[in-house]
Length: 458
Image (cartoon, rainbow, N blue to C red):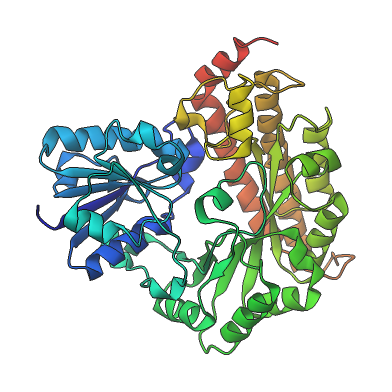
C-alpha cells in the first residue's frame, strides 16, 4: 500500500438548512490527520461544509479513505465510502467517530475497519500494518499534551475560516441522559496544560476563538489559570465557549473571563421545567439557570441559551414557558432543540426498547427533527412547538425592538436598569433577522418531513 490518505468529514442532512451555517470543522479529523502526517503519510482533509460542495471521485484519489462525522452525517459518510470503493477498489476504508463507535456493524457494511473511541493511539499502526480485526477499539489519550497541535494547512479551505477552533479538554464528569460525550470520551475530565493551550492560541491568526470543549469550566481552578494566562498575553482576541450554569457560582471567574476576552457563552440551560431537568440528569435547578444568565449579563457577556424540548416529564406548556423566559430575560441568542435519542445514549436504548423510534434515517437525527413518538403529544405537535419557538424568538418585531434600542442607547436615552450593556442591540437585531430567514427556509425545505410526521397520528 501507498501512503496517501484522504480524510473526509461529510456534510449533514441536505434538508437541514441550519447545517449551511456550520462552517467550522470537527477537530478530530484535523488532529488525526496531523498524527498521520507526523508518521510520514501524505494527508489531505476535506470537509464538505467548508468546501461548499459534495466531494467527488477525483477528490478521493488516495490509498486510504478515513471517514468520520456525526450521526446526522453517517449516511452521507457511507455514500462517500461506496463511491471510493467503486473508483478505487484497491484502497482501504476506515470509519470512525461518534456514530461509528456506537454503530460499528453498520459502518462495516462499507468499511474495511472501524475504529471505536479515540483513534490517535491506533491509527498509525492500522494503516502501516493492517489488522485481522474488523473493529479496533481505540484508547483514551491519557496526556492530551502528547497530541500534536492540529495542522489546519491540511484542511482544504481552512484559510476561509474567520474563527479559530481550539480544543483544550476531553471527557465530562457529568452524565446527561441525551449526551454521547461521556460514552465517547469518558467521565474523567482530561485537559491540556495551560502552556499547550497557549501554544495553540499563538498559532491562531483569526481575531476570534471558539473553544470546542464540551465544558470549558468543568475545572474552575484550571479555568482561572487559563484566563490568567490569556490576560498575560500581549495579543488580545475575543472568544466564546460552552459551559454549564455552575460557572456562575464563581463570580470572580466570570469577571476574569470577560477581562480575558470572553464575549459570549453557550450554556445548556435545557429547560425551565424542574421535572425535565431531573429527567435530563442536569444537576441544576431553574434557579441556577436564572442566576447564570444574570451573572453573565452583569459582566457584559452575551448568553446563547440551548434548550431541549420533548421530555416525557415536562409540562404541556414548556415550549411557551421557555420562550417567555428567553424574552423576559433577554437571552441574546437561543436554540430550541428537539430531544434526540442518539445512538450511544441511555435515551436511545430506552426509546428503542419501547418501540418509540419513528425511523433510523440518521440524516434527521440532528436535534431539529422529531424522530421519536413523544408520550404527551403527537410528533407533529412537538415539531411545531420547536418551530414556533424559533419563529417567535427570531421575529421581525423583536428585530425592530432591538434596532430601536440600539438607536436610543446610542443617543443616551436608555439606561439599562441593571447597569450592564449586553451584546449590542444592533447585533441582536441583525441576528434575529438572519434567524428568521433561516427558520423560513427550514419550513419550506422540510414540508415533506412534516407531512410524514402528520401521518403518524395521535
